[in-house]
Image 1 (cartoon, rainbow, N blue to C red):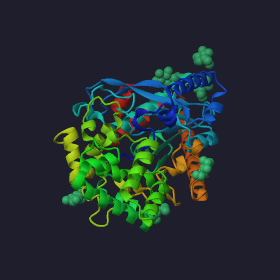
Image 2 (image 1 turned 45 degrees about the vertical axis):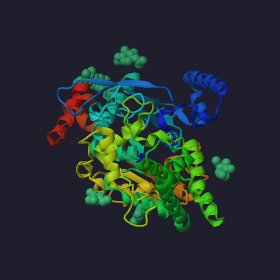
Image 3 (image 1 turned 120 degrees about the horizontal axis):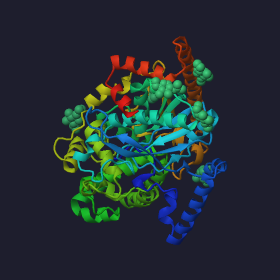
Image 4 (image 1 turned 90 degrees about the vertical axis):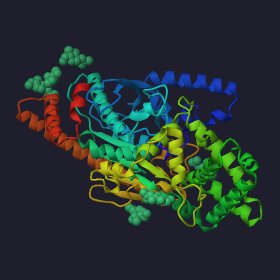
Length: 539
Ligand SMILES: *[C@@H]1O[C@H](CO)[C@@H](O)[C@H](O)[C@H]1NC(C)=O
Ligand SMILES: *[C@@H]1O[C@H](CO)[C@@H](O)[C@H](O)[C@H]1NC(C)=O
Ligand SMILES: *[C@@H]1O[C@H](CO)[C@@H](O)[C@H](O)[C@H]1NC(C)=O
Ligand SMILES: *[C@@H]1O[C@H](CO)[C@@H](O)[C@H](O)[C@H]1NC(C)=O
Ligand SMILES: *[C@@H]1O[C@H](CO)[C@@H](O)[C@H](O)[C@H]1NC(C)=O
Ligand SMILES: CC(=O)N[C@H]1CO[C@H](CO)[C@@H](O)[C@@H]1O
């Protein structure tokens, strides 16, 4: 299993602003660029030039801030807290009343606020952008040792509550900065992939805290046997490339039986057990389509097939150069022995597997017939991995997860769903529009995961989500206009309802919205799902 990866190629916690070129640079170059980055950071701190600096960089900001976050939002007696990292970018903010975009970071270390298409939207709407890191990932882990016991507070439910608390905390800190109390800016929540699901779920569970949500490739449906994933890989590849991939899989399976060591060595993956190795191969193919690089896999494979060249050698080259090196995927992230480590250098794979094994599954099992991946990648493989890595009893009850959120029948409003036509993850998203929840499919040959925000292909990183290299820029830009239209409408409706709030307050003879919020909070608790007591304690 690989994560749906909110942050493409921000893998392994290696999210320094030096970014993906790091591995290719010598240490002196690295030092020079580090000094240069420090210099830029200084300049950025100095003020007005920050926007100019941000414009050319892959992050709007990498300047860390911290808040204290409650460890267990669902226990009335556990008051422990941990430090949660977050980022803020105010250069475009129409202060003090302009909107605030809450950009959710998902299942990897969060090194800053990416300078993708959201930056363009923030500028357009005069919005501040704030981004908290997901609990446990990166520098926001409550525990040093990530034992299964210590992971019990890692769930989407806790993460959503973190977002709600962060939202209140940040609003209050902004109010303090502008010397005012009880003011509420209009908020809008945005996420891609798993954080796209969080974005939709946030609007579902905390509708009073956001004017709306963008769920870009938001995987809101927990799926146990996610066979559509592999089917979509075949479909995105097209018949010729799919056949070549399938033949490659068969050949590798045969060679694993006769001489597993040499075939794994060919791929630079001799440390992996056979099934984990097959999983690596399946992912290498899938992620090419997921991230808008169909040609990186299909062109060489189809050519090799035509010219009678060795398919396994060709695919090995693709995996080593494209997947492991360029896309920065460490082979160790497929190694169950590595996943078992409780203090790994790169914790994100273990952490995401825990979420998979305990809550959302998305097991990317081979369909019964005509699969691209090896049939050995079945439900059993995933369950065994969960048991091996986390111990007995960790099991993804997807029925409960979908009961809690509604899956594709999510009963919320003011959420835009977007998906890329080639993205294997889109079948775990909401692909049909419903009332107040439009869903757009962006169709093009290299439209993948989060294409609306990131453009295509997705590496190297595209500043401002440049869509010019999408096979149909128009398809992407049309959906972007639609997204902007919804944000505009929902922000303005939110402002109207805030004005109405003020009128109500006036009629109570008070202009203090803290008082008013107190009443709102109380009335929510009548219907409540236990939210409010905690929030009040935290204030
Ligand atoms: C903040 O408000 C207080 C009390 O209302 C006032 O005394 C102070 O001058 C204000 N500060 C700023 C920076 O506006
Ligand atoms: C998943 O597929 C396996 C066969 O691979 C089957 O035994 C199992 O019942 C399926 N589970 C669900 C929940 O569909
Ligand atoms: C688009 O792709 C072409 C060919 O791969 C490349 O030369 C060009 O730099 C890309 N354009 C942008 C804006 O990155
Ligand atoms: C709140 O009310 C007081 C007096 O009732 C008034 O002086 C003040 O300007 C009001 N503040 C706002 C933000 O409306
Ligand atoms: C508004 O009310 C809260 C609590 O009810 C109080 O702490 C705060 O000082 C009040 N603010 C103003 C501006 O009166
Ligand atoms: C809005 C939209 O284009 N939805 C489409 C998404 O893709 C599915 C197929 O998987 C179509 O049925 C939907 O109409």
